[in-house]
Length: 468
Ligand SMILES: [Zn+2]
Ligand SMILES: [Zn+2]
Image 1: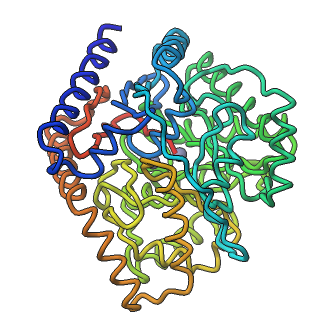
Image 2: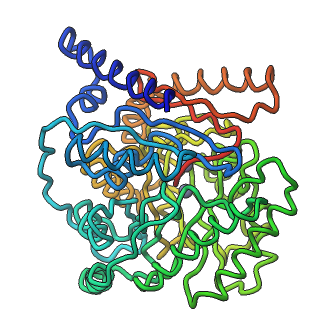
Image 3: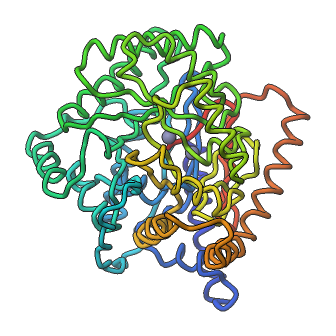
């Protein structure tokens, strides 16, 4: 509690500092920092608290705004703190997002038109604050042809049952707007769930939460459910993998059709899913192979050491995936650039083209016909709704673009130039972290990480990964 208060105080101090900076030298403040100061529902600081038993944690920048709007919809400070307290009471051991509403209204955005006729189904992880059906509206606003959402608070073990009126509105909304919920809607599981947990009581809690999510999917007609495989918590890998598979088998027997979709991870510490072999071995133990799939996150791939930056390396990674896991299991992608370098094991999402991946891998993805029809979900840092609307259009503009097209090269350079500062900061931080890890091997306790000026958070993923 004291730690939380201290961090909250620090968040306030940080905010004051930034505000002062803005007043004193507004011309020197980058647009990004300015946005941070101005924005409604701003996330002041993301606190990271890891539970060693759960082996889960939440990172950082990506979809922080979306995350915040779901946990703590941008209403009032009073409401925010009430919700925060509720979360704190219920789960001492989870990550928290602290934010403050600043009393200003956000810009009203003109809905972006969806691109008709495209076979690459791009969208983003949108908010469902106020009810699951709002995810559809939020996706329409940014021109998404697919979308991801949380089905309930991703930081609470139990949530009120979904209202039938909301479920009905969701099903009708999908129908009306041409979203196929079996294929193009990809809910993301709660951060708390670690199906590999060896503690019987905690494993049951995780399983119940997981099953509840799956049941919600089925009520909504959703056919895919994406989750993080979990963490070994330092126990044996093979036991952990079989615990996950066992839970999946049980969940499949208690539900009807929803496919459980394992996500590849950046692979720090005890986290399962950094290696394709982890996913392969889980799938091998799943009885109903039609009920299991894989979602590849581009940022996680890169952080785990899979280089996808050139046609040659991309093809190699895809053929490794096919050889080790099997292409038929690939049912979705998370489309994120990376703030951290190759094989950094750090899960830091960046906007498309600004990170260490650059624009080229996304051109390769958008022209990979094997990925046609799969939900391609952005989980990039979102400062305002139009960020995702622009990224969707950017990605769609890459369809048909050649790698040597001057227009494409100019766009790639423009974005790379925009991200240079953050790449430098994150690169240095990653090096320092690696050096630290060499000095202190086996350190398992996560610290709360303070954001630096460039909004680059350290995600000290010694024992667990984040979200999305
Ligand atoms: Zn991530
Ligand atoms: Zn994820």
